Length: 108
Image 1 (cartoon, helix red, strand yellow):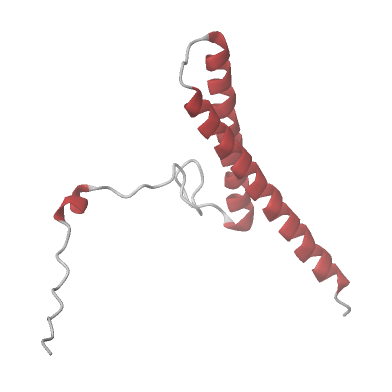
Image 2: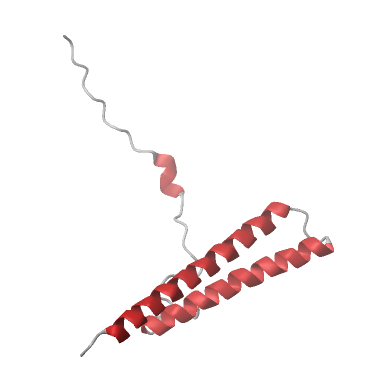
């Protein structure tokens, strides 16, 4: 029986020029570019990000209603982003409240 050797994988050179996608405001950074101050700063920036996403969705909805924009898919994408961001913040708030409730149940 003849065994065929495994050929090495050749690198894809075309991907070297692709820049990685980074969010507008990295986690742990404030919108001013300076590091967020602890948990409160990160939470504040998350809420600010949700507000920015919601504002972009409202702006696109108004542009579509007035006829300034003719691509419905952009509005649908912004709407889903806003919905997902809000759901994430609500889930985070619920987990935070559960943790607080659990801490308050501890008997010292």
